[in-house]
Length: 234
Image 1 (cartoon, helix red, strand yellow):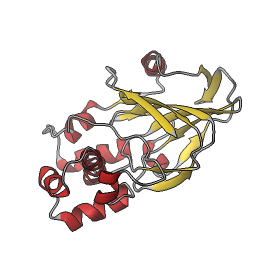
Image 2 (tube, helix red, strand yellow; image 1 turned 120 degrees about the horizontal axis):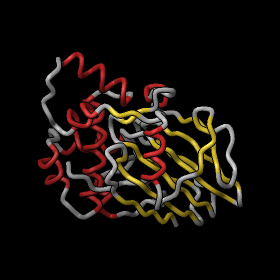
Image 3 (cartoon, helix red, strand yellow; image 1 turned 120 degrees about the vertical axis):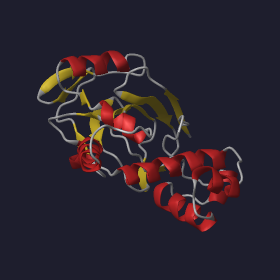
Image 4 (cartoon, one colour; image 1 turned 90 degrees about the horizontal axis):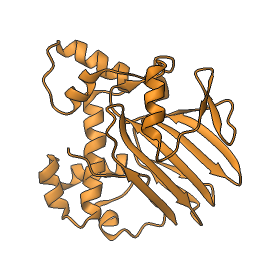
C-alpha cells in the first residue's frame, strides 16, 4: 500500500507539499511532472535527500519497503541559481551529506524540513538567496499576457523550468485528465474538456505521461500505484 497526503501552500514559491508511506509496494508509476522537487525519504533509520527535476514522461521506479517520504514541489518560476532547472530535467541530484536532522545544499548545512514547516524552510532558502522566483513564468503558464516579446518569454520559461510552454501544458493536461478519469468522468467528456482532438489523441497522451489507459484509470485496477496527482485550478 502507498498512502499519500498532500496539501496546497500559500507560498508563491511552492506548488504542493506532500508526504507518503509505503508498505508492501515494490514499484510505482512515476507520472510526468513539470515541477521540480526537494524530496526527503527514510528507510530503516537511514535518511536521504535529493533535488528531483521535472519528468517529461512516465517511468516505473522501485519503492523502498516500509519507507516514509516527504517532498516540496516548487512552483513554476522558482529556481536555484546554483543548480539550474534545465540540468535537472529527467534527473536528480542527491545531497552529499545527510544526517537524521540535517542535509547539505549549496555547500551549507540545513535543518531537514517536514510536512508542517515546509514554508518556514522555503522562506529561509529565499532569505539566503538559495531560491529565487520569476513571477512572469507563473503568469504566462496561467494564461497571462506578458509585456515582453514572445522570444524573451520562451527563453525565460526554458531557463526557469527546463521545459517549453507547450511541454508544460501537455504534461499538466494529461495529469488533470487522469484525475477526472479516475473520478469516473467519461473519456469523451475528458476529450472535450481539455481540447484533445479525439480519444486516440487522449490515449497517446495518457500513455506517454501517465502510463495508463483511460479504462485502467477508470477501473483503478493496475497493481502499480501512481505517484502524486492532485487537482488544480487549471
